[in-house]
Length: 64
Image (cartoon, rainbow, N blue to C red; front, side):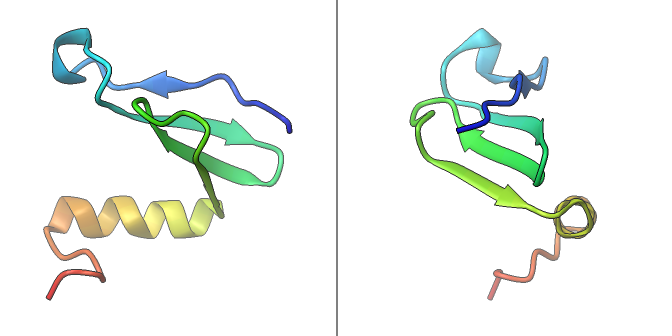
């Protein structure tokens, strides 16, 4: 598996190990939770932009 270099926010739980990590992969954007680094989700750059936009607006598509 192509492993991207992972980045996490400077606001990440005081440097703890409970963070969302992001990496650029050849096939898109890779996301993982630092507590379960083997589980990786890959999404397209456009899907990632939409996700960030919805989170910032407080209206993610999965909310009810």
